[in-house]
Length: 285
View 1 (cartoon, rainbow, N blue to C red):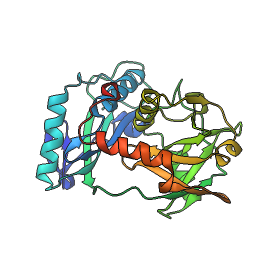
View 2: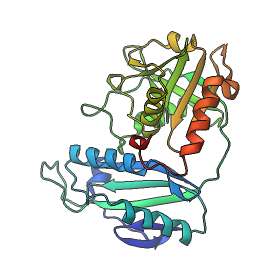
View 3: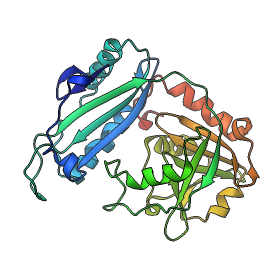
């Protein structure tokens, strides 16, 4: 398996990083996960916009994003690993510095691009389960897609390894936040609802895409702070992330939903599949 580190394509067993990298020592690291569809990195511009903005928050000086150069790296990793499509994790850590908290800008971050095979799978329905562990509050103003993942790991331990289930986090104030590795949406009376960012959820790239898609089609979208009972009372429920795409929920607690037979899901998923192999940004909708 070939990965990419700081400008070089390298076999995974040959990759080394310093124990003084502050991404390792203090969690000062970020990542974006995305996938390709027929070789196309879906919503790549949006992923790098979020990555760049998050790096500024962490005081990490990233190279300016260049779509063509980034696309070439992705294509070469697919070629070297003999893959048509793949899961990618584009990881940026602060880089080396002495022990101790630092306020200076990190000028030499470490970039590692991980890759693993991923097929063009058909959406699989999932059951939702409300987790008892609460979603922690973000370290800063909003949640970043950072190395701080203990809350997710504890949630995963509670949920277990069943592939057909997704855990749903509530906040300490008992309002909905997000899924274990996803954002959550529900439809009620032809109106779309999702928690807002004050609930500690990640501003997911697929979340942004689905909101933009709905608004373009004249579907009302409301973001706010909602009790779990409101979502369970919905007509349809869906979770989203950048690797699995749009995933319908067919059961939550004792409530049964239409899952992949729901009219709203079928429409949204058809739109998603049409755009997945060509769209660079939600702005192109």
